[in-house]
Length: 221
Image (cartoon, rainbow, N blue to C red):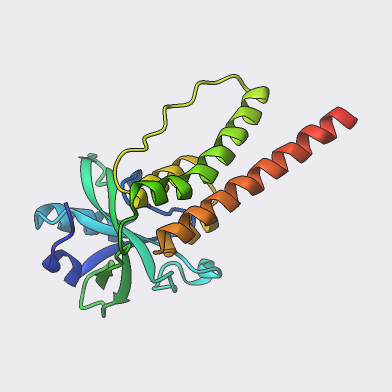
């Protein structure tokens, strides 16, 4: 379900150094800091269980307790499950809904940060043939990478979910394949789905090249 205008008007956001939430994907979190415990409690009490995850800019360590700069494009989602613990901490599960541009609001007494958020649209959907042209090189590179990984560790991969709009498919693939927060943020910030798919293909190709080099080194030694 899309985020409503009143949910976007003052959207709480959780700044994190290495966590990026993509649309359609699930992120589990444990919240223990008082300000973010308050954030979740307020979200649940207001029956607007929505918040964004925003990646902290480099150099955040010296001002983490304050309001260090964050990337202004973030993933916004809904709390789909939560558990309150006796010590006041929360476990929550977020499902990403959309990309948003954050315009941070003044504190106004809240211990946590909020922003006026604008949804970033993906643009015109592609027809079936164009969709296939965009996905084919991504899937080919992913297949080669997973085949090489299987040479090291025998494991069964979950089947790919290629249903739904191309934008959602690319985001799901990126969530499945990319662990590096900088690469995930790059995918999040690219609103053109064709360029987003190319960025994912390039990231997978980089992983494939690195793994191939490791294998060559092992053989030569």
